[in-house]
Length: 349
Image 1 (cartoon, rainbow, N blue to C red):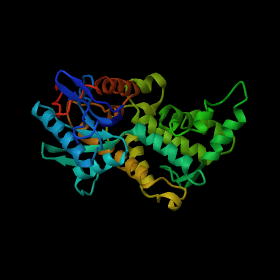
Image 2 (image 1 turned 90 degrees about the vertical axis):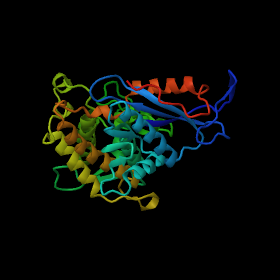
Image 3 (image 1 turned 180 degrees about the horizontal axis):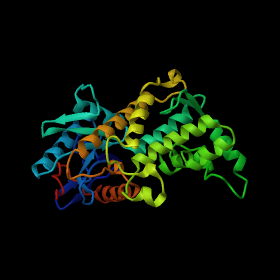
Image 4 (image 1 turned 60 degrees about the vertical axis):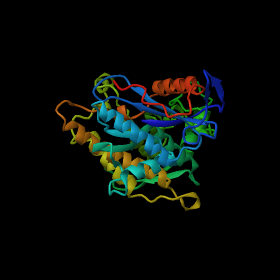
């Protein structure tokens, strides 16, 4: 996994070394830190591999850094299964460099590793993109044909707002909708907790009871997608009595079939930007969603062919809130200590 964190630009002189210069442009003061993290699949805690101060991160420089980490992991007896990042334009360009025009853009190769690897976008970021695309559409409408449905449905953001306005002054409420969830600011749009207040089962049930069946069906579809990709405990489905939270044991599982059908549903819809976007997602969100869903399905098939792996938890390929807070603390503590020379790999167990 890799991500870019913003830091306070500063230069310090310590132990006869000048600290704070960017690796990609030594003449400039670093404004961000590129953090690369490894999450072992067969046990073990995630750990940070590299922290690189950067000025303006380019796709070519990012590919070079990731390739060096892939080489280090392979030299220490490991193998990279997947790369995960958010849907930033630089990350998309980096993935395009690894895929090198392949028919399947979610599969990449690198000279440092013989086997191929998958390239996925963080499902947490995708959830926020779906909510933001829905709200920012000119009419607040998204159209999709859910898996198994015989017609297209039109989900209206105004239905969610109407539900909030109707219940905001009540003592007993059917949902957890707040003003921030329905009217998020630019900063609040980055919070997944607010997106999940809208994309919630209780909201879908309340809308269905009020007669807004299309919006309820859309939310129900996205909620099921989130449950499947957010499975992080093999026993969660039994404790919560929810089959959608079951780990993936086979590519024939109903959850994998649903993700594949959902990818086909979104792929068949049109997309656009600005005024050309009419009741649809943006091209970037649509591409990230479809490629990540198809990549996750194929990756499960590859992993389950390994006799050491009996099930797959799709939440492994996302950054949890605790890990992100830990990464932010590490980047904050290391911002003034990153030297100009490229740091070697911190630790490979």
